[in-house]
Amino acid sequence: MNPRALAAWSVSGITIALATGNPVYRVLVLLCALNLLVALRRPDASLRGLGVALLVAGLIATAVTTLASHTGDHAFLVLPSSIPVLGGPLTVEAAFFGASTGVGIAAAVLAAAPLSLVLMPNSLVDALPSALARTGAAIGTALNMIPGIARSATEIRDAQRMRGWRPRRVREWPDLAVPVVLTALEGSITLAEAMEARGYGSGARTHYGAVAWAWSDIAVCVVAPAAAIAFVALRLADVIGDWYPFPTISVPPVNGFGVACCLALALPALVWRR
Amino acid sequence: MTRPVLRLLLALPLLVAGVGAASTVARIGPAAPLCAQAAYSHRVGLVVEHGDGRVVRRCVGFDTPSATALDVLQSSGLELGISSYGGGLGAAVCQIDNEPTTYPPGCFTATGLYWVLFVSHAGGAWVNSAVGASNLTVTNGDDIGFRYDSQSGADPTPPSPAGTCPVVTPPPAPARTPAPASGSTPSPRTASASAGATATPHPSTATPSTAATAGVLGIATPGPTAAPVASVRSTVAQPGINVGILLAAIGAGALIGVLGISVLRRRRE
Image (cartoon, rainbow over all chains, first blue to last red; front, top):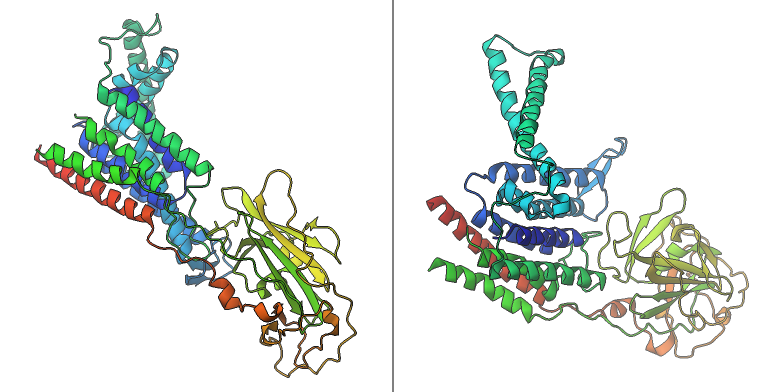
């Protein structure tokens, strides 16, 4: 698969997921993204962490909306009004609205996830326009340091424990934080020297091999943005409506053309192979 | 072998969706008839212009010296959803006659459309209200207008209220009956019960019902063709099978099926 085609697909998925508050369209985008991730993700990439994070985000969105929004006809619990912000009726409608928000967040994140879980980082940097190549390399390098720092923190914590370190108060955490920061700085300097030794910043980025465009890449690159544009146009024309569960829950209005735009995002799962 | 099956499963809903028609159901009902007479001492005209241009008119009667626009709206029989502007502005009208279908907690939808409130005092021109419906006071002969319009740009006025309620002259002070002992919330009454075939443009000559109670509002209905509130509401078209929902269900089912197959295949690998 061509990284630029996948990037176009991701942007299209995010656009559709964020263009409407209708949970039906969001669920369809989420399912399309899940299909792509499960079928095409790298063998070394796990979906478990992402899944847990999205589940937590969805639960937080639902809880916050339920507690803070007191609109809706069907209250299942009434908190004392003396409690600031949270006081008042907690409604089923607000809970549904929070869940719909959570689904939207999950759909948007899953639409962006293939860029890191399907593509190799170097492929992504290669796909950037030449004007953004250096910035992309810097950002990619910085993002790659995050898991490295996490690993380093685990190793240092274990080493400190073997020396009898037992943190009981916050003031004892610098015993861990200082070595982690120093290690990260040392790693950054080493990486910078390695990049410079390989010619980073000395000229235009060169490529080991040109990335070819297959017919399937072209199809994805055309269909996905076209679906997103059509969806936004339908949204602006008010053919595709938003959905709010207030004052009482109702079935979301769903348009056939909007559904077709969402299902068009399933194309990569049809035409791409790992 | 599996891959063609997967493609077929995914291609099927796409094909079906491609030929799907818009599932929105047009909901156009006849404009409510105008009032001709009422057994109330005071009346206010209500003009509601929907986003599609449909205009609903009501003539609402009441026996108190004044009423709020919210009272009038609530007594008109139209479906209503309200929220609070806060800051002493009073109630914001979020939904009238099921438009918009739903609304967010903050009342105003992302489409930028909302119900603009106008008032016309004693047959004057429409004036945009600076306060919410619960804080806008109207008296006999006034008119209230609501227009579903964009939050940006100018606010075109609703259609003229002329004819919604006939010209009203200030009625003589009615002989009020003593309020019932319990009488804090008397039951509302509609003028449909007293709507006669002989419409008169001067309702002040109509004899107020001796049962008239201060604070009670009602709908002044227009003579022999008057329709009760229930039948006015029934003019809203009932939605049939929603093609969009059907397509979405088929598509989601296919995607979940393919997802399950993909998961099993990855586990085997």
